[in-house]
Image (cartoon, rainbow, N blue to C red; front, side):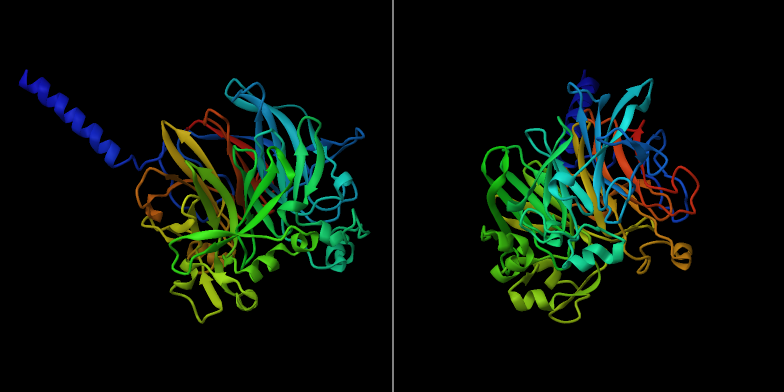
Length: 485
């Protein structure tokens, strides 16, 4: 009897400890760092199915032609059919700006139907390409988001400053005629809304401003949208629609942190067209906070998580002269050289509390205890597995220097990027709480991670791998990963 009671008490204590000290392991065994691979390295038990490959696959256009698919895929959206985690549609951004005589210049979007059959993901029917001519074309389609009403927002990154740069001697976007009252270069760099019911672009969302749109996250209220600006220095924006499910009109805000870093507020942006065309510069003049390359944004349990890619030294002098304020964590960076030069080589994962508007550094990149290095976070998603919420983070290193990769890779000037899981239940996590999930093939960025609703399949892009690699990873490729979730 005494022994049974003791076992019961011990079980209760262990259960309490499990609540106080959350599980720090992911649902898979983390893998070792590897800076010499032409393949996709995954945990034990995991496998991948190749779904969509640049050039090898052909897309069907509106007029019925079959043409080689564009590459440099980025954002992925999985739209389930009847709520299924085994049958749905995948939408894929193309982060391109180059001329294409067959599919049209600039970026774009492809889509196709996928289904899990006998443990393997397969493509059903044809691949399709969406024509953006009715909205003036797109440019460098990067991140995106599915809205509560079921449309898709796709982000145009890195807008140029002249038609000459847009044209680039015929290598990029060749139609430089005015469009919808804008000079053509001014018509690039917006959010674009796409209707997956018709697979047609609806419009560019001028009210969300023009800047280097990296990513976007639409909130369930059908009005609030968080937007990142991939620039160094760049600004964090928020948009609130005037009417639910109508993103064409609304108020754009720029984030301003308090000087002590303990709070913040949202600065009201002017709503005139010229201010929207020059949104970042206007935000600087209002006193917006300056960040070092915001990447993807994800909202989990009412907290806003942002990857700040960082990088080597950049000069904030012009933005500061206009009125911009460097973020508190950057002003305290140990590598700061003077009041306008900022160095954040490994980047950060940031977290914003929308109640207090306080933005903190959740994790700073750098060396890991296993000998690897977590550097320059970029792609971001979240997944709930066994009642544990994980943040899933992809790297996109800009340089092989500063111990970002191993000595052999440095000597060969070869980039390797990894993907990590972080248990968000861990109080005050450090980068050593990150669990390495994958190492991408030589040269590639892993991006666009998205899960099926049941959390058992991850779709991800192996973007721009080294062309010297063996197939299937010598070209941009979309894969489905299963077996370890």
